[in-house]
Image (cartoon, rainbow, N blue to C red; front, top):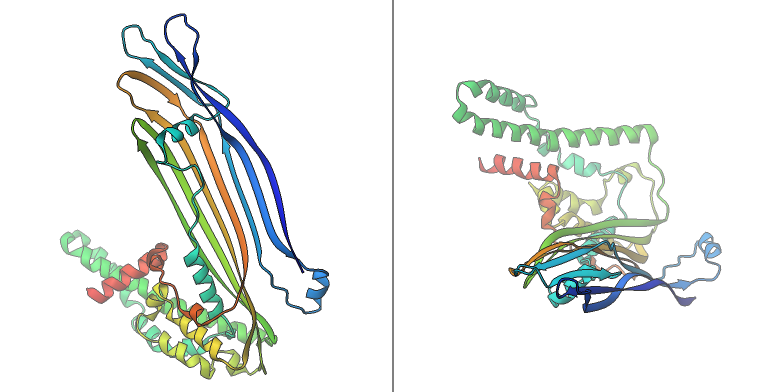
Length: 406
């Protein structure tokens, strides 16, 4: 195996911004100040490992797991800027204008002296990587179905469905009373809506999923699990924002967004795999701790913030003598975009009209790491945003809150 590095570069292309000054009527504008900067640049760098007869060795069953890193960054300017500042004195001079093939925005940023950076922001992907590794470890030696959990939670499911039509009837009555008691209806209607939602989410949906799983088992049976398997987990993190950056008399606008996607995998072998129907349906002794946690009231809401189920599964996978972890890997894709534009300049002595160009900076990074799973990876990261990550999660939280604290 041989490590290699490859580079590819386009540019850099330089441009010059000219700040012109006309001192009086009839005089020719002269260069008051100028600035040279990069207006177009693209760089790619890749580090990987060359493996002789790679495809042949993979086909023979050999596991090849090497690090790899690829980075690309670019910066471009749109051009087409305009600038004109006319003195408000009686003669209307001096007059400042712009010229050249450079960038007005780059010129503004240089005058702002560090208030804004034209480099694309670095994405924060630490939490996404932790999530993917935690999920991958929890997926080691899982069963195709989890009917033990379904059986253990049947009591809680039936509690939501103890009166399937009661919630709908209560909701209908609250609407009927609306005309008579407007001031009291909101409370009843809110509670009724919460009951309907909870009955659907945690009563009907689990039963439907279990019914589909049972039907699939009856129609297709259980397929034998291979000795060598791969468990995978995923994590993601994204942010974006915009702002106006003010420095002295200058104003620039900035928009940025970052996205991180992580995938982790564990290649492992299971000694003496079995085709037993009860075991493949999820009725194993090692599944009891996770099932015990699943039947704790509101454990599913705790898992959204701090995934205790994944912790139990990860510890079980590491402690199981029948599971041999061969290798692990993690891949991270990070992208960032930034757009900056000169917006305005305020000077009481001048009338200023301008239209700034856009400086567009991007960065992309792909990295593959060799990973050795450990007990540290079983500890779940705290992800508070999962409580309100989408409309469904928000509805769950509100409905449970109304039911618990009414």
